[in-house]
Image (tube, rainbow, N blue to C red):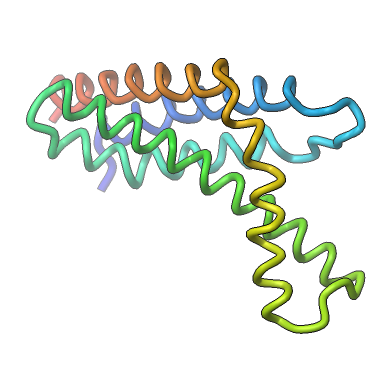
Amino acid sequence: MPTAAKLFAAIAFALVSAVTAHFYVLSLPESRPVGALYLVSVAVGIICGWLIMGPAAKRARGRVDAMGSGVRTALTIAVVVVLIFACADMLDRALKGRYKTPLDALLGVFEQALVLAPPLARPDIIGVMLLGGLLSGAVAHWAGRRWP
């Protein structure tokens, strides 16, 4: 059921995802194509904001609890986006015949995730995710209290 907390959380985390994706792109080498990174990041931000943070904002016992849920949501978005792109890379490699067994392909997802994840450990990206998660959690909590 749509609520104000879900709507505000979806919008806020779409913005956090877009800013995080921008900083992630800045950390990549020039030769690495970004493709649909922004679109996928914003879509995952909207979905996670709606499904994770929206209900958590209504259940939160206070602003601090909601802000903690916001940080959790921001980190969940980062993990999901990395896994989506790792799966896409694995499928691309699988179609080119680089894996012998399905288990090799499954392990290829995690190998690609280990290649894609290290730029997320930069201080500016961590700061954007933490600060964005805190602020978005507070905004979703405010909206949930303001418009029940």
